[in-house]
Image (cartoon, rainbow, N blue to C red):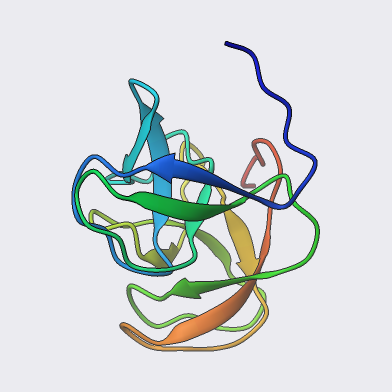
Length: 124
């Protein structure tokens, strides 16, 4: 069934337990944590959820900024992608999905503010 979402977030069933602030992708209509920098990431979880529970996902297409969990050292302005656990890490690799730009610096497991990117960005 087709749907239309007018907001910045959307609820999805989570295939497995998932943390707050991690990047997610859709698999068979449910969300799973992103596990690679090349995943087609739709957004970021806004809270923790267990397997089979609904989790609110801040969509990359939404207005405003988002709070994400850092997977390493991040500097203001860094292009970000996902690590193997959905956390946001710095990227300079051309084939990686750029999911946003850091508005705050942070270290592993810090929550930082990010401006999500819409679509694919080429890294040069």
